[in-house]
Image (cartoon, rainbow, N blue to C red; front, side):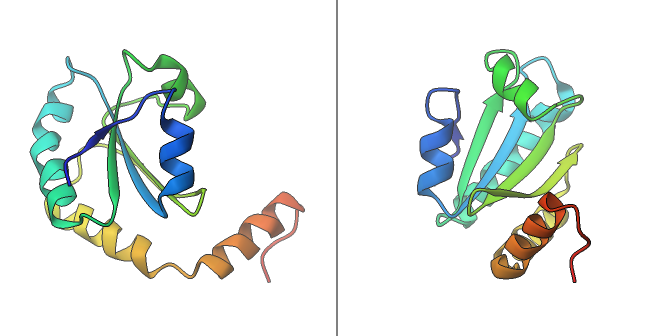
Length: 125
């Protein structure tokens, strides 16, 4: 599956209707973003069950602000409506592959329990 352009108009639909969504925050003027693009596209092609979205920070400033993007490229991963990963900088292919494997392996019941504990102001137990 090719990457999907994510905008403020389709963001909620994409995140709510797909269990795993990778988001690449980028801009056309960003050299590291352009060099990372083929790696990201290859991962999208290799993992058609995962949505790989691209968010142009120039065109989608509101989304970039919501995610508090300070440097690009930045990768964020949302699984079951919970952001489970975020990192700035262009990842090499092997590191992106490790992130994909790690996100797939997450115990989402444990993640939800940790989120609930954090929201309640408690340490997860």
